[in-house]
Length: 310
Image 1 (spheres, rainbow, N blue to C red):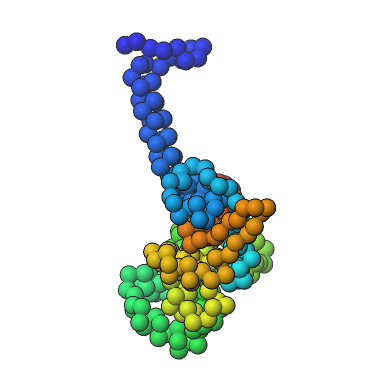
Image 2 (image 1 turned 180 degrees about the vertical axis):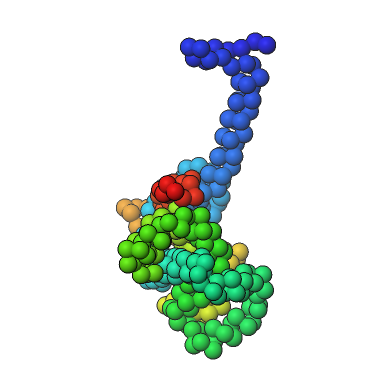
């Protein structure tokens, strides 16, 4: 079979070259299909609002403007919603990761006699759910309706993340814990100084899961805080605009302060539901895109960091 000389002593057959070319074309196609929708959204968000209604915007804005983003951050409602989303994401991620990892460590200790029973209860809760109405009644009984705490307290422990962290901890040698106890360390010290640094990859993984879930969440706002405007999240506002955009005339009335004109010399730029929806989508997506690359490297780390020789 014919071959192509690649390097000094390396050769590739025609079949290998064709196969590599097919893989390259396929992956390029997948990248374009994945990136294009977001790129198009960015282009619409940077385009004049009235011009965006005409459609036909592909990769570049026809009439470039920053007005959509200016209005987005000037509007008190949207800025407050953005603040709510940021703070709830940070608090929920920190508390959920800490409490979930602490619980995972406690139930991974073989000397803890109740670990099997408690683990079974937690696992069963993944498959048996009381439903929406009982959950709402529970939140109401706990006086969490229309309160900021409803974003944090129900999400402190995630069973799936608990299983991931506990499995990771079970893979660590017991010698780590035993040596720390011989030196007189308590359980909390063992967890914070020995276990926690070793499970950073799993912590980073569940932190990303929790952060993405908290940032994208809007249904809990709809259920528990829809009556309190000051607690609306950015994703809930985005959902409102997505619904209102189905009726342009109604959405123009609902947009209120967003239907404003900004004069620049002799020209004017109008913000419309189409353009403001794209702007909110970009703002809601960017934080995750920024954070993900820093956490991705932990996903390829082995199941244990360090080790002992026995």
